Image 1 (cartoon, rainbow, N blue to C red):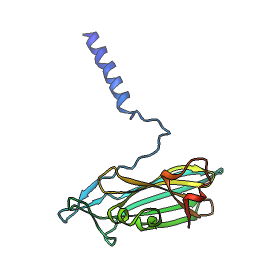
Image 2: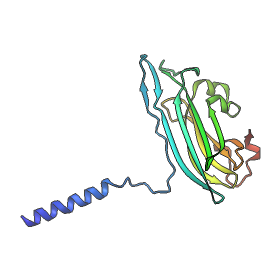
Image 3: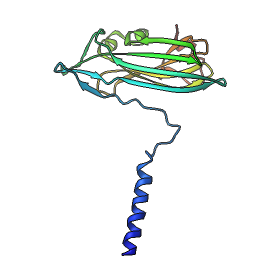
Length: 187
């Protein structure tokens, strides 16, 4: 009986230890999982509201990053080949240094129109934005424009420097060692 009790306790401890970890390394990049929910209208889908706030250190200075993604009914809807209609999203990125605002802008997919062709822009939605990393150029965010509910997407990077200036880059074209000048759009 004692062996069964020890075995049960040991099994419970192992189970709890495994349940408390997700098996992912701590330095792994965040991934944004898009979940579409049905709205009141049949055949119309919208992403859930997403918010992310985190502290980021760049050049020994702490910045606060706030990202909010919301479905926006005032934007043109996107209809896929199966006739399912999706509400497009607007994403607001706000960066502060203490109480001082450094950057505050709301993006739609049209914010990236210069980086993609018209057909893709018409059929894609702005899926998400997440903090990627800091670089010598500034704070880098990964942005995803994609066909709804597919793996077909256009990776875009938005880099905000310490003065609040923005650079938009088509992410897959950038070798890490370039200065990004030939592949970027400064705004």
